[in-house]
Structure formats: structure tokens, C-alpha cells
Image (cartoon, rainbow, N blue to C red):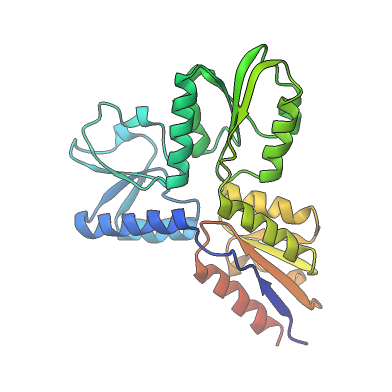
Length: 282
């Protein structure tokens, strides 16, 4: 069997925000030994499992946590500040600075009386936090279809985006809203630059290979969107978490395989996949 050519996106591995969050968590665990996280620190089960083994305890509700002096870690995608209001805890904030920026924008827009449209997944923690900050002035739209049926009335509208949303989806939704009845419309491109670069590079590679592998957690929104982006140009695109998910059809008889990853995928996962493919094809 001839050796396959593997093309790995230069925008693979951890993004800045994820690296920062993990560094903060490591330092906190080293100092305190045990820390409680309000949900997974990032959306990668292998990384989360490793931190859990070091003492990071994942909780869903702060009320179930611990004594009043407990150390509570805010994950990289942020939380609604009201969750921690009046709680006597030590807060370790790993919120990505880019997410924090969107939160500041939303708070200002609410103060100024805008109807705030958030482009993204309403079930995602980042979007939940943004919606919480916007209060009753918020609506979440995930795609052009939802935007088409949106009826804002004659209001001031402001559009922001989940940082890991698809940039093309953001533009499509903004275009649909521009057709509506409003008194004022402003928008903020809050899609992370790294997310845009990942999507563009992954799409470019997907158009040049026989099979495209997108590595990342099943619950990772940005990884799922990356896979969707690649499928638009290459139907042989597969979302996998680790090398254990590799199947022979991914590489048998193939000469060119592309690899891209979500922002929370560790470099070790890429190495594992590449090594397994090379072993199977030589």
C-alpha cells in the first residue's frame, strides 16, 4: 500500500483563548489542589478528563458546589454573571478575552435600548451568557431560515455573533435582517479571527483532498461547524474525536487526506491520528 499524503491545516490545535484558560486552570489546581468548574472548561472530553484527574470537579449548578470559600472556575466560553451574584466564592475567570469583549458590547447595547440579535446556538454556554446579559432585549438566530421569519417591528436592532459561529452564516443572517422593518441597524462582527481563519483554511484543504478529517469533541460547536464547512466542498468529510474513531474507508486507497481541528483539540490528538494513518498505509 502506497503511503498517503496527509495535509494538516496550519490553523490546527488550541486557539489562544483555550491555551489561556488551561494555563489558568493548571495554576489554580497547583495552588489549591481542587477547583470546581461550572461546566466543562473547554469542549474536549479528553482534555476535560485529564483535568478532572488533577482535581478539577465539573458541576452544573453552583448550589451543589461546596462551602462558601470554594474556588469556582468560569469556563473559557463564559457564563451569565448573574449565576455568581451574591455567591461567596473565589472566582477563577478563564473566559476568553474575545468572549468578554462581546459581553461588554451586549451590556452596552442593552443600556442603549437596542433589540439584540445574537447569531449562534441558543443551547451553547457562550450564547446563554450573552442572552442573560441582554435580558428581554435578546433574540437568538441560528440560520438564514430563522432570520427570515424574524419580525422585529420598528425597533433599533443590533447584531452580534457567538465568537465561534460560522462567518458566512453571520453574513447571511445580517443580510436577511437588513430586509426587515427597523429604525436603526448596527452590527458587530464578533466572530473570532481564529475561527474565520480555521474555516477558510479547512475549506481550502477540503477542496484538494479525497477525504477530510475534522478532529474535535462531539460537543464542540466550532468543530461541528468546521465539519459542516468542509462538507460543503467535500462530501467525504468526517468528524472524529481521536484516532480510535478512524475507519479503513477513511484511508484505504486514498492518496490525499486533509486534517483540520476545532479550537479545543489538543495537538496530541492530531499526532495520534496522523501516526495511525501512516502506520496503516505503509
